[in-house]
Amino acid sequence: MKILFVINALWIGGVEKALINLVNSLDPKKYDITILSIMKDYSIRHLLKPHIKVKGIFPKKMKGIDHLFKYIPANILYKIFIREKYDIEVAYSDGKPVVLLGLNTISRAEKFTWIHQDISRYERVINCYKSWSEYIESYKNFNNIFCVSRAANDSFKQVTGIDKSTVLYNIIPSHELLEKAKEELKVEKGNRLVFTTVGRLAKEKGIMRLLHIHKSLLDSGFEYSLWIIGDGPEKEEVQKFIIDNHLQDTVTLYGFQENPYKYIAASDLYICPSYTEALSTTCIESLLLDVPILSTSVPGAEDILGDTKCGSIVENTTNAIYEELKRILSNPKELIMFRQDIERAKSKFNEKDILRNLENYWASEEFEYVGN
Image (cartoon, rainbow, N blue to C red; front, top):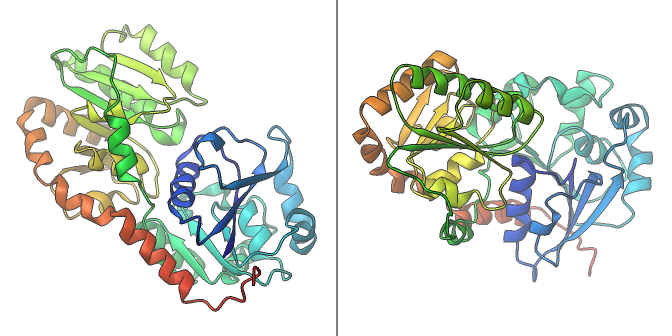
């Protein structure tokens, strides 16, 4: 079965990492996989297994691409950019991939797409559409729409009125995760508790507010170490805040790490301070590494922690995060209690079950295989 996945870019990010986990999990004896990247940014291409083909369209620094997809008919774009026939075509990220696959009338492949965010809070979602009605129309042409959390699914249905979406969690290869976590960590942890956060250093991830909270906790007499793993547009601001507030002894910015799992595994608590998420991959990874979680009440947090006691979900405010960290630091035995319920939380993210559910959707469609 020939499958085409279309994505905006293969750069460092949660959606891109989720795609890599998915395609690497698919059986190469059953699937011939190609990834088409709208932007020729292949920063994490090396994480793909060798049999997966990668193609690109535009130079990564090219501007005005949204306007091309907005004003050039999708049939023309499809003829230019997709030359082969596929059994399944997947728009794995929003915007341009959905325009390309959802609005063309040429393709005879079965079409699927993924929703990775709460679209009611995602302003850029229609940048490459002429109108909101065109946006909705593009999704109506997919056989099924997979949403990575219940909140994302509810939001999509409410905003678009389309009722053919379903929840399908991202695949996390736990065996690879556990192996990478065993790698030697050449860092002295010391006697303090260590709290870790991993993510792109961008406004929506809430790293700057976490640093403000950290300083307030230190000023209140609490001692612990904060490890920040990631890179992004706020890097200079983060570094400046650490230096200006003399936090070098308690905050370590490790930058992007090919293997963040050894840092997470050595932590006492994982913090997700994001303003918005659909389903935090790093929160799930933390659970799989037996590390409890504190998360803001972003979409997806309830899917991960809602029916367990292996962490905390707090209001999406600076004060709520501060108060919960203060509570945990005042009662560190709480972290031991959190760990006791982690095993039950893990069961929801069994990769074999998720992959089986996906393949059942594909199997339910009638294909005229292009290879036959």
